[in-house]
Length: 380
Length: 258
Image (cartoon, rainbow over all chains, first blue to last red; front, side):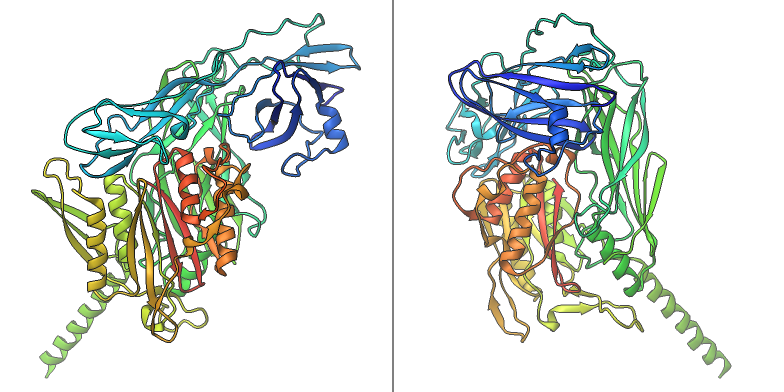
């Protein structure tokens, strides 16, 4: 929405049943505008982004779409926002510039379940014990939503293991010693997870405003660069992450396309936490928590936040000196990263990424891959 | 006389060195496990020995646990660890100390024959050491919950305790929220209903901000059950601790990977 450009979406409900939708416009890293739309059977609706921004139409969270948004992606889900809820919808999009009399088109795909599985596999269940199995599905975009509660569970040999379908789906019970297989099945609607056929192109000139395709072929990165993006929050009283710094990474070489892939972290070398003292209400850092990020069409992923939650930062900054312990103190974590292509194939980073956060009497210093930022902060 | 004086001076020097070493070496949070045949021995030196035990065993055996501290109100159940000579804020921690227990394991896999029995052994050992508060174990689904049943009041009398996460929530209040927002709101609602402050002690995985919470049922449920639903929906093998801080009188909710 700059230099005279506008983007419009035409939504059509081809079915008899009414559809309640949530349109999620991702217009900047970590920024989403979520607009609810109701479509009765066989009706259509037109969404004009510039009009939404100019009118200041609030979304479900009371947020406005800024006029400064220039690029991004639209993800449509059911009204609950749960990606597992199926929807029946046809969509076309257009990018227009009345000033230069040019237009372009968008690229739409269906996202859905492609690879259904059960975890853990194998599972070891103690005799006379319960054990929770989970089912999941890897989607086109690399995410793995949980299907445990909507799967039909069974056991090949119920004399060895039984698996519940209700009230606790996937809960296995070891009846007697032995080996057997457990299964989960899930009904996937037709066309789910398939890339839709592209819509006919409009008969008009394509312009440089056309967004890049989200079905590009994925490459294997040789590395990445990292750059500070933003602090978690500017007001410690509003949120819990004022002492955490967010970093955005760009996969390289930049000539390759990684869009639609995912980056997942796991714990590498043992973490260290010199801020912890015996009796603290904050257990020492136990390693990274296993985040997953989507890689954008610009080969960027993040933000990856490094740092303490604000309450823990404030606790150690206040308590350690009173306790007779020194500041600064630090937490260091080692993050093993794995890049996954949407078409399959994984690439594990050669060396773990070092994340460090240091609490001093005057503030916080956070570091990711040697990129260090600091801010003055006095815990309250 | 001269020789005696030297001896006394040397003795004093040694004492100082030992004191410095004791201050520099904090007891480790995690306990240790040793296996001999089908017997495992667990030992922790952490002052918060019961949550240390639950945390270590939960991670060692990859089992989901939720641990809730009893409130610490009686002065005799706290230790003042403020540095000598410091004025102002007193730094208090719950009274505790070493804890050890033995339990039966499979001689090959080293998995406990019964995790519930192992945790009950830990509770029995904790009581036998005379540490503050008493706790009980409840098992629901694939989760093992250790919740407080009694603690000493400010006046020092044994008092029955209602666990914080027994507070009821309407899961529908959390619908349309992402998992991280749902968890924060659940903690905030429980805090408001019980008159306590509960803070989140650790950043949550990134994808918790992209997955929406979908309650299993519209019926009211305990905060513990709702948090279990949120954790299960995340698809991540996560356990949690709720620890009380007597210095600032608040609870810290810490999720951790198992």
